Image (cartoon, rainbow over all chains, first blue to last red; front, side, top):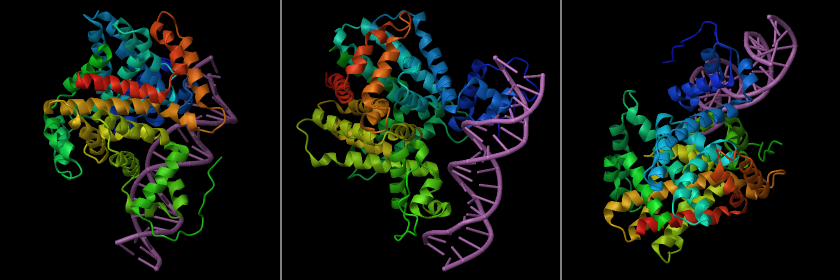
Length: 230
Length: 230
DNA sequence: ACCTGAACACCGTTCAAGT
DNA sequence: ACCTGAACACCGTTCAAGT
């Protein structure tokens, strides 16, 4: 069950912060939060814990750097295409983050941690900037910029985070947990709730089974965009 | 620096799942995620780890139960007042969750975990139901219920989560970290960003310093409500 | 300046044994 | 049925020592 190590022989290139962060992301992708340990990291990098601590202060900083690296890659893509409209630009940014969390489900929790606990770090401004540029292009007064950008960031990160597990199970080839089963189990559980306490949740349980995460995500985003430009 | 134990003598009441969850919430409130350990728990409950494992399966289940208990208390309050309008009802539910995260900052991360990894658990339907009831009272077609309720849940939890640290530092009497300083530091860091890379973020840095979390939260919520009822 | 690896304190969890 | 507490495997982190 343990991942086979690809390099138990001596490493050739020198260690670097970049190389360490790269390995951390790989471990997180492969086995989630619990997969990132200093022992797994030292094995993969063919080194000792002291070497890693020379380049990063502690595990928290390493998680922050891994989060920043993935977010930077996600929001850096968009300048490539010039959107038809500001609305389209916002959809592109939003989908970029949505897909980043889809590929790296551990990102959802880390994002919540980074944004709330370290707002002066690099992750928060990066996300704020890419959303904000599109907001500025929207036809809203300057005094509304901050509110609009905040609301969009909250919605996008909230939605992306909550879809993380769904999305991950959708591409996961691990036996026993595919997307249809996952949604089916949730829908079934919701339908068996107490009718007196949960009338609404029961009433929409069937829509849960049929819905598409991405469509749902974009539909909600459009509701917010409508409100902003109203 | 360690919290003084209140009961090192033998406990009088029998142990119960409820009592354990209650102690877990207290530890989480006092010292955050890191504060909840089985050792701290056994000391506080004057028992051994085996006794706790008789009532809960593992730490994950305990965190889930603590989260559910706090959320249940937060959303249970609202039937007491009957809202003037569905919009007002949604604001009440939203503020209830906002305040719960304000009082229990660890809730932000746990909510993200519960909602994404365990959607068939008790937390997700609880939140969905309290939002959904108000949505149903809104004048929107049945086919839009699910989208509207989802969008609201995403926004509310995303926003509440990202405000968690701000809010906590606002009431925290711990020396060196009060709310004004915290926001000031963030605003200052944003103003020193590279002008070429971060024009938007720099431009609104001063609004960060002056904004009120709760007003901002409600303003964003109203944008979404406008979009839903448009 | 950069790396090694043994050692430390602490963690979640188990389980034979008690009542 | 419920609880005890020693023990186990594993974790993040440190640090004297090497190059």
